[in-house]
Amino acid sequence: MNVPTMHDPAVHGGAGDATADAGARAAVALGIRRLTDWAAGHRAPASGGVDPLAAFPASIAFRAARVIGDNLAAALAASPEPEVDRVHRQLVRRGGAAECTLLAAPPLRTDRFSAALGNGIAGSWCELDEGYRLAPCHAGLYTLPALWAEAEAGGLTVAEVLACAVLAYEVTGRFARCWIFPQMTLHPHPQTAAIGGAIATTLARRSDARITHDAVTSAATLVTVGGYEHALRGALVRNVWAAVGTANGMRAADWAECGLGGLPDGAYDVFTTLLGQAADPAALDHGLGETWAIGSGYHKVHACCQSTHSAVEATQAAMALLPAGRTHADVVSVLLESHRPQMSNPRPQTTLAARFSFEHVLATVQVHGHAGADAFAASTLDDPAIVRLRERIRLVPYAPVRPRPLDRPARVTLTLCDGAQVTGECLSARGGPDRPFDDAQIRAKAQGITGERHPRFVEAVDALERLDPATLAQPWSAWIAAALAR
Image 1 (cartoon, rainbow, N blue to C red):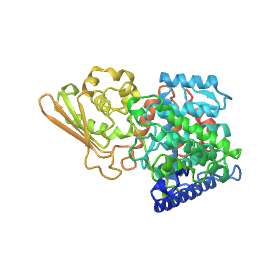
Image 2 (cartoon, rainbow, N blue to C red; image 1 turned 45 degrees about the vertical axis):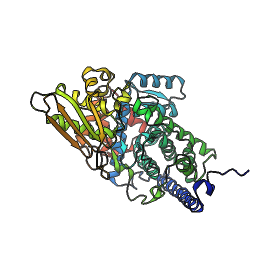
Image 3 (cartoon, one colour; image 1 turned 30 degrees about the vertical axis):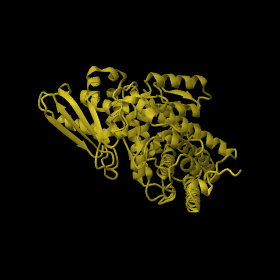
């Protein structure tokens, strides 16, 4: 008996479908080869006096510095969380050589893989890390924990770290754009983080094109599948997905050095054949070096899922229109028109669920006036005022949703006890390339979440963002030690 395979024309519906599949598969394989060769070729040799940042515009080097500072701050913000603290101390107890910094308070030392795991978990925890606007992807979160660890272990300079950050972000962002899952039933963290860890590690190690390609193609088979429902319902395992993926990618780089690689078209099998998302092969290699993915990132001051940020701003706008003397206590019902009304959870049981619950986001903003980290503390879950408001919020689709960057809109209407209504609207939340935060806002965020435990951090990041020559020439290990010093 003949059993059809995944690539049998009968499975795909006919010879025409099989031909199209073969063409897309070949284009993906070629695009990955070109992308990894390009990235490996941009890494300067270990000697020869080549400026690691010479290939990039100054604006892109600055963006790398900002993304690094923002993700470091996000990880530091999570270090006091009890679960994060327990994970960090467990990693140190069970870890290896003390070669890298674990972003605890005070900082701890452990092996590179444990450091990347711990820093990746912390970076994901508070929903304050930077993200990529052109696809569901947090390229900084997926690449930087590996890069920071390898930079310390390998003796990289600050300038080399910035260069590797740009290139690793580019490769990771392009993979994310090649396979965009529009329904968001799968969470992006476990899909793409292994790619990020692999490319960041090979770049930090100055691996050649063969090792880089083998590491990335291997990492494409080490992705995991996590349902978005875990975030909506608050299962804290979601906060380890990115870190585990990054560590898998680091191991893929190790194994590539031993001659272990994946199939050139293996990523197509994973993301298209098995997970069912059509590929856009041009996203992998079109315009390499002309535009930079790291320039299309967004930053967050609201400690919740970026898809809720327009609703935060719309709620703040509506609250500002309340008649004098009226407060959230006078609100009897709330209507939210959103691009993702399915993000509904009126009774979140964990702080993670609260960060993905439109009901909690709107309620806590009405009570606190903001959506910073304090608005999602554990105490807010059963705050009577917030509980009351969460039960009075109704979600409906926003229509029509426009193309990016206006693809995540929100309109909030508050009805008061006397029947009066006020409405606020936001078509595109602040923080993205179309509505960026200014320097003072980014600095204030970092100061607010790190200043008490790491008073020198913001000053160190300022020097990094100025691309100060003395700072760029420093070993990364010296810079991070100074940034975290008390």
